[in-house]
Length: 154
Image 1 (tube, helix red, strand yellow):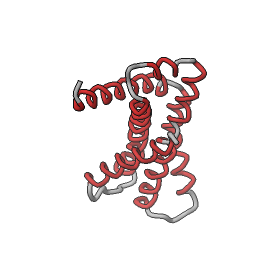
Image 2 (cartoon, rainbow, N blue to C red):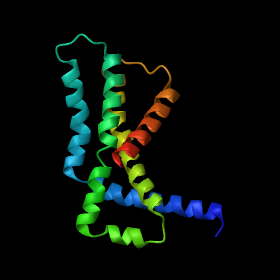
Image 3 (cartoon, one colour):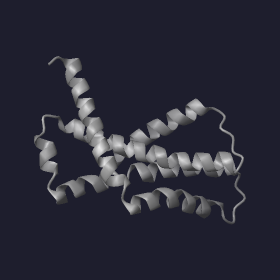
């Protein structure tokens, strides 16, 4: 197996691990409630009683939502794997430890990107916020979720 085939194999394993964790983590009622209610409560805590423009509120809300949602998956999944005694299966599988970490990080990234889209849509639809550069917003959300998900794995 040459280097490119090995990289392709490891990335495929990471995606499979991320899918598995998505099925486990995303169907929990607490996760769904956190994903829907957290941006709302954060918005209300910043907006009530203050005269801050909606564009400032939404941009702050997106960054805070990214930070807390992307760093919430990793600390929950690995202890759950240890408790269910399934981490040993992953560690003896013919994949590297980095592929397991990448799978957890990918799962965290997808969750935080989905959660951070909620304030963007609310701002666009209800508050009249305009997105000046959609590409910069998408790239910023992607890299922020990647960095915060990696921090959540530390």
